[in-house]
Length: 446
Image: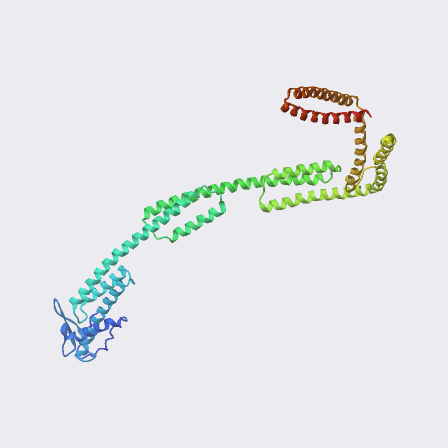
C-alpha cells in the first residue's frame, strides 16, 4: 500500500512496516544488498517524499515523515526486500516439495500485484525475472502434480474395479454373515479411495450396488424361507412333545419303549427351529423321555427284586445237576431221568434277575450239552448205516490192496524197479487207511 503524502504542517504517526516472514539465513544478505543499493533504484527529497526509478519512469511511492529522508528511502527499500524474500522462500518450498503449484501461484500473484502498485524501492526487473523463474517451477510442479494425480486416479480406478469384481463374485454366496460383513467393508474402503472420472465411477458403483442388492435379496429370501421352516418346526415339535407327555401313561413297557423310539425318530426327521426355540423344545421333550425311562427303570428294579428268591432255588438245582457229571453210559437212563426232574423244577422256580440269568443258565447248558454229546456218540456207534459204510470202505481198501500186491509181484518179476517202488508206497498208504477203517468198524460194532 502506498504511503499517503502528508502536509508539512502535519506530522503523521510513524508508519509501522509489515513484519516480514522469517527468512532463511542465506536470503538475508540479499535483503541487505537491496537496502544498501536503495539509492540506485529510488531517491528521496528533503521533505521525505520517496520516488521509485521504474522502467516506465520515476514514480512517487509515498512520503516518510517519521525520520530522516534516508530513513524513508530505507523504509521503502525494506518493502522490496520483503518481496524478494517471499519469492525466494516460495521457490525453495517448491524445490523441496513442501507446497503445491496452486499455493505457489497465489504467492507469485500477490507479489506481482505489489509490484504493480509501486509501493517500494528496488530492482523491478530483477524481481519480475525472479517471479518468472518461479512461474517456470510452478509449471513443472503442475506437470508433476498432474502425473501424480493421474497415477492416483489410475490406482484408485484399478482398486475400485477390484472391489467391484469381488462384489460381483460374492453376489451368489450363501455365507450370509461373512459376506454381509465383507460388503460393508468394501463400501467403507470405496469411500476412502481418491475420486476418479465421475461417469466411470458412477458406472462402477452401479455394478457394485447391483451385486450387493442381488445378494441382499437372496439373503432376505433365504431367511424368510428359514423363518417359515422354523415356524413349522416349532409346530411339529410341540406336537411331538404332547405325544411324549401322553405316552407317559403307557403301562406296557414294550409298547412305551416303542412309542418313545418312534417319537425320537420323528424328532430327528423334523425340521430344525431357531437355536433358542430348539433348546427349549428339546428340554421339554427330553424331560418327558427321561421321566418315562426313569419310571421304567424303577419298575424293572422292583420286578428284579421280586425275582431274587429264585436265585437261591436255582443255585441249589444247579449243584444237583452238576453232580450228575461226568455222564456214566451204564447209568445214563437214570441220570437223564434225574436231569429231567431238575429241569422241570428249574422251570417251575420262575424267572431269574437279569444279572444272574446268564451265569446260571450257562451252567445248566453245560450239563445238558454233556448229556447230548454222550447220546450222540452212542447213537453213532449203534447206527447200522454207519457200520455198513465203514465195512464197505474196509472191503474196498482190502480189494485195492490185493490188486496193488499182485502188480508189485509182476513188476519185481519183470525187473521194473521204478514201478515196484511206486507200488510199494501206494501199498503202505493203503494199509494205513485200511487199518483206520477197520478200527472204526470195530468200535461201531462193539
